[in-house]
Image (cartoon, rainbow, N blue to C red; front, top):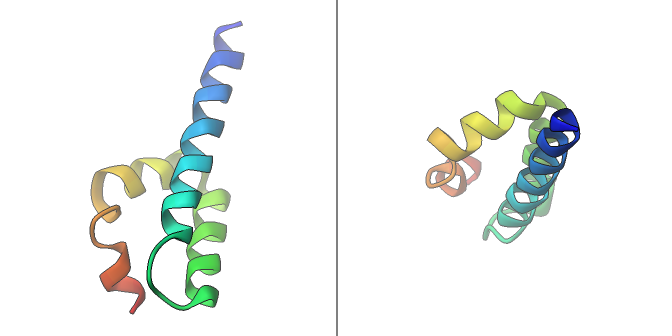
Length: 62
């Protein structure tokens, strides 16, 4: 049961992060690439996104 709850939390955070990346004012291909990298890296990608990259990602993708 606890594993299911952790999975649901991860799924919700991943969807939220993908939507935030999609709203960035950069090229669509770069946004899609960032989303794919986030999905492939799973929990590590979420941690990096929320702790380090959230505010800097738009500058990095320009």
